[in-house]
Length: 304
Image (tube, rainbow, N blue to C red; front, side):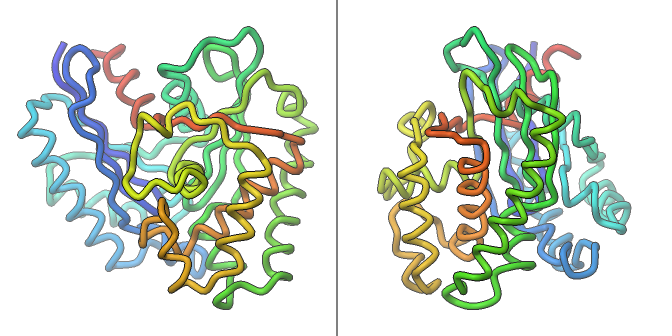
C-alpha cells in the first residue's frame, strides 16, 4: 500500500486529505474557493472561480507529492454536476496539472460520504442517517454499515445565500421562506425514505454543520478531536441560528468558531440544518469531521 491523497472540489470549498499507507492522516486542508458562487444566477462556473480553484488544486497536488502520495484522486460534487461549463473547468485542470477530475453522481457522493462519516464512530444496531450540507445541495443518506438509500435537495449554504439572503442582517421573512422551502423538500423525500424519520443515530458532516458545532463550543481554533463525535442538540443549533441570523456580517465574524470565509453563508446553512431537525423531529445530531474525503480514500485503497 502507498500514501494516498484525495482532493474534494465542492461548491464552497476545495479540500485535501493525505493519508499514509496505514490510513494515518498526514494532513487535512480546507480552502474556500467558491467554485459555485455564480451557479444560482446562470448555472455556470465563473472564470475567476475556475482559476482560483485550479490554482488551489495545483498547490494541493504539490503538497500531496511532498508527503509521498503516489495515488491522487480528485472528485467534484454538486457544482460540477449542475454547471453547464464543467468541461471547461476539467479541461483547464488537466492542462495545468495533468490530472482528471471525476464528477461524482449524487448516489456515489452520498455513498462515499456515508462511508467516510461513520469512520471511527461506534457501531449502532439500527440505521444511521448522514446529513451533508454542502455549498450547492444537501444530501440525506440512510444505512447501517453502508449506504442503502439517499436523496438530495437543491439547497446548499452557498446557493441558498444567493437565492434567499438579500439583506444584512437577513430579513425574518427571507429566513422563513428558506426554512419552508427546505421543509417542503424533506416532506417529499421522507415519503420515499421513511427511515429518515426513525434513525438510530443521525450524523452531520461537512463545513456548515462542523462550523455550527464549533460556534456552539466557542472554539477559537479548529479542534477536530473535540468536534468529532460532539453531540449537537436541536436547542443548541437553534441558539446558534438565532445568534448569527440577527447579527450583521461584520459582527457575525467575531463569533469564535466561525471562520471569515463562512460568515456570509452560515445563516443559510443554519436555516437548512434547523429546517432539517424540525421536519425530521431530531433532538440531536452527532458531528463527524470525516466525510467524502475519507470515503474516497477508503475506495481508493480497495481499488489499489
